[in-house]
Length: 340
Length: 292
Image (tube, rainbow over the protein chains, first blue to last red):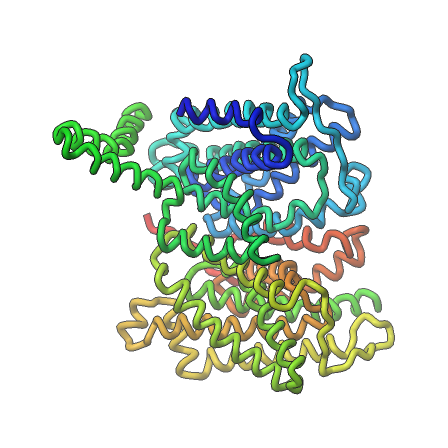
C-alpha cells in the first residue's frame, strides 16, 4: 500500500510527456468509473449514460474557464455541483423505474448527448461542433514542475480525496442504506430506509463523481468537443466497471488503466477493432470471472496466502483463511447492528 | 392543413420502420424479459449483408431474402451461444452481454466494410408522390413492406399452432412446458424472427439514412421509444407506439424551431422519460407487479 503510494508519487519524476498524460487520464477514468460503480455496484441501479455526466462536467469546466475566466481549481466543485443536480433530477423519475428501464432511459441519454451539445441554441456556450479549447494550468507557488507533472499531482490529489470520500460514504449509515437497497429494496424500505430519496441521492453522487472526472479530463486534454462524448465513452466506462469488478472500489483503478491502455494495444493489432476487443473481453469476463479483476486478485491472493502459510504454522494459517473468508459477513452483521 | 397532413404521412413512413424495430425489441423482451440493446446493430449488420450480396451481383430480391434468412439463423445462434447459458443470471450480466454484442457488431462492420457512408438501392424508385417531395415512392413502398410484414406476423401469432405456442411460452413458461411446448426452441425462434424483422427494417430504412455502421443507433432509440409508448409487453402496442413516435417526431420537427434537424434524439429521450415517469407500463402494456 505504502509502496504503491510512493511509486505513484515519484512516477512523474521518472517518466515524462505522453506517458504521464496517459497515466493522468487513466486516473481520471478511474474516478469516472468509481462514480458509475457507486451507482451500479453499491446501489444496484444501471446506467449506460454516464458519458453524458462526464460531458456535463467537462463542458462546465471548459465554459467556466473560457467565458468567465474562472480559475481551473474552482471548475471541479462547479462541475460536481452541476452534475449532482442534473443527476439528482434525472434520478427522480428514474427511481420509479426498475433496473432495466433506467438502463433504457440512460441509453437514450448517452446517444442524445452529442447531438444536444452540437445544437444551435447551446452554441454560444458550447461552441457547437468546434468545441472549446482551454489552457493547461501551470504549477502554483513556483513549484519546479511542468504543467503535465502538476496536472498529474493535482489529479492524484483530487482522486485520493474522492476515493477516501467513497470509502467513508460506503462505511457510513448512508452507505449501508444504499447497499441495503441493492440487496433487497423491499426489505430496505420495511427497515425504514427512504428508498426513493437514497436512490436519487446515489444517482446524484454518482453523477458528481463522473462530472468531476469530466472536468479533470477537460483540463488534461485541453479541449472539449461533442464527438468525444459519444456512446463509445459510455461503453468504455461500463467496460471499466465490469473489468475492475462491480462493487469493488480499488477495482475501479484497474478499470481506468484498462480502458486507457487496452484500446491502444488493440488499435495497434488492427485499426478500428478496439470496440470488438472490448466486446470479446466483456463476454469472457461474464463467463469466466463475474467478479471482475478485483475478484480474481482476491481469489489468487487468498489461495496463495493459504497454501504458502499452511505447512509452516497450521493454526495461524487456518485462522487467517477464516478471516479472509469471513470478513465480508462479519462486517455486514456489524453493519446491521449499527443500523438498528 | 396540407403541410400537417403531408408531414404526418411522412412521419408514418419512418414510423413504420420504428414500429418494426419496436416489435423486434418486444419479441425478445417477451422471450427473455430483457431489452436487446444490440437490436439496432444486428439490423445494421444484416443490412450490410444484403449490400454485400448485391455487390456480388445478386438481384435485390435475392439479397433481401438472403439477408433476412442469414439474420434468422444468426439470431438463433446468438441466443444459443451467448444468452442461453446465462438465462438465470442477474440483469447486469445480460446488459453486459448486450453491450458486448453492440460493440462487437459495430466494430466488426466498420472493420469489414469500413466507415464510409454508402448508398443503398431501393426497388421502389424515389419519385416524389403528391408533388411536394415529402413522401416519395420509396416511403410508400417502405410502408407497404412494413405493414405487410406486420399483418403476416399478426396472422402467424393468432392463427398458427406454432405462433400460439410461442405466445404460451412467453406468457407462462412453466405451464407451457407442461402442456408440451418446447420453450427453449420457442425462445430461439423468437430471437431468429426478431433478428429477421430487424433485417427487413434495416434494408428498408437504409436508402433513406444511407448505409454505415452507426446508421441504426438513433433509429434504435426511436424503436425503444415506440416500444415504451406502446408498452413492452404488448406487440400491437409496440407497432402503434412506433408509428406514433414517427408522427410525433416529424410534427415536432416541423412546428418547434431547432428541433427538426438538430434535436431529433432529444425528442426520443423526452418521450422515453415522460412515458416511463407517467405510465411505465405504456399505453397497452400490463403493469408490472412484484411479489413480496
